[in-house]
Amino acid sequence: MFKLVVRGIAIALWLVLIVLYFIFQPKNLLMSSASYSNLDLRRLSDARAHRTDLETQNHERYVIWSFEVPRSRQNVVLCRGMTGNIASPVVLEKAKLFNRLGCNVYAFDYLGCSDAALSSAERTLNVACATLDWVARNKNCRRDQIVLYGGSFGGAVMAQAATKGPLRSLILDCTPFSMAAVLHDAAPISQIIYLPWSFPANQFETDKVVRSLKMPVLFIHGQLDDVVPWQETKRLYDAAVEPKTLVLLPHSGHVEEEISPEDRKRLELELSRFLKI
Image 1 (cartoon, one colour):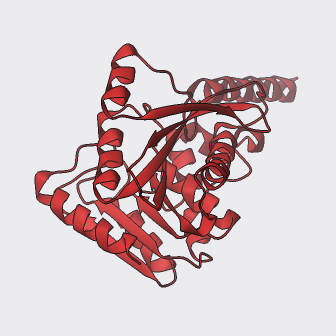
Image 2 (cartoon, rainbow, N blue to C red; image 1 turned 180 degrees about the vertical axis):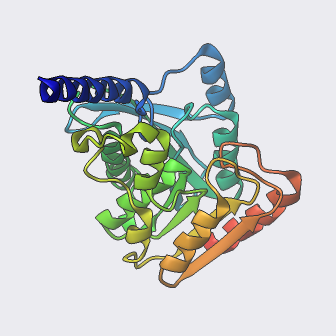
C-alpha cells in the first residue's frame, strides 16, 4: 500500500512538471509571426521598401521587403532576430546601412503557417532558403553573388542556410554559439524534465556549422551585450576556418539595440571592407 502511495505521488509530481513545462517553454524559438501596425507600414514606406507576399512549398506565408539601390549588383539577404518585425527602427537602420554601402537588401518576415507540426525554427529556415531562391531567380543574380546577414538568432538561421549551396559570404551579428544551450536557458524546467519532441530536431548549433563553411565569414558583436555574451561570438570565430574576420564593438550592446555613435563609423568601415572580399 505504501509503495502505491509513493508511486502515485511520483506520477502526480511528474504530471505537474509536464504542465509547468508547457506553460513556461519558449513558444517561438527563432522568429515569431510578424504583423504590421500603421506606424510600421509608414516606416517601411518612408524607407522606400517594396513588399512581395509569397508562400513556400510547405505553405509558410512570408513577405520579402526589398530595399534596392539603382544599378547595384550586390545583394544582401537579411534575417532579423526573434522579436519585432522588419519595420523595427534598428532593423531598418541596418538595411539603410547596407544601401549606403551600395547593396540591395532583401529582408523577410515570417507571417504564418497552416502546418502546426512544423516548429518555428524549421519554418524560419524554410523561409530563409525560399528567400534565397526568390532573390536568385527574380533579381537575375547567381547564388554565389548573395551575401547573408543574420542578427542574433537570425544568425543561427543564416549559418544553416549558408550550408545549402554556394553563397558569396556570411555575416553573423551577436549570434549564439549554440542554439541548444539557448533553448535550455529559455526553458530552465526542461533541464529537469526533458521532452525530446518539444525541441526542434535541428537545434542550430552554429559552432558546428561554421567549421564546415568554405566562404568568408564576418563575426560582429557588441561587448555590452547582455542578451548573448560577446564571448560566444569569439568562440564561433575561433571555430571557423579562414577567411574570417572578427569585429568587437566596445560601446554597443545586442544587435536589436541601437549602435553607439562611437562604433557606427567603425562598423560601416569594416562592412565596406568585408563586402569587397
